[in-house]
Image (tube, rainbow, N blue to C red; front, side, top):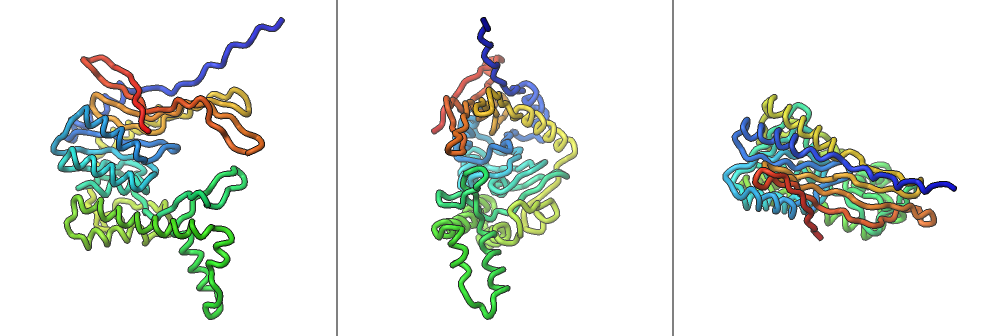
Length: 337
């Protein structure tokens, strides 16, 4: 008689609180500022829940005069960027953005809220042209899911049509609407206007000249051929942003911190079979001295063959916190909906 096999051990990502706290403490000594780390993985992103998590951090450390924020993210929700900057400004009069690596899209918008952006040799910001995944967006047939559509893509289709049509005959939208629903086109145009407005509002926290805020916003939203176009130190200065170089020591420490966060956010997937697995990946991290909060997936996923999609089951994903209380590490969960 065969004995039942033992249940598979679910993989857990490493929690490197002691190591990350050591680096943040060194950064505070080197810079003389309160340090906040804001880091998202490739599968994470800027979102409104991050702002509520940031509030939990600020309740721990309290208000102050100046804060330096290490930002590493590929972007996310642009509206959350304004909420993020507004909350920082409620607690701190001056904000410095520390950018050693990727600071893209919505993360670029957070950096725009800083009085000064310090960038390293590997650092870059990006354009902020709007894209969205609408309920009526086209479907990727391979993965059976909605795809994002950007304002720049639509504008280029129209421009190519007009440049190749004879005497401007025909209407490009007649053919575009066969592939992209009219409501999606309207929603993207609206999102583009929203993005410019949000940039202007964020810049106004430290730039009083409204015309200058409008100029910078339009450059970042309209002047680049790609959403992921890397805006390095030289170009960021040309745009009119207040940019300085990170000191080599601070830059190296921030890259070391990114390495630790990347290790924490490694894929923690336990495969049960070809149709079922468990996901424990850490996605977003915020940290300051004495407190680290992070969002961790904690869910089973099952593949629905008939529908060609993955279904989440037993989902206990949540925000989790590690704090130093009387010299002892205390772990807890807090829920945001």
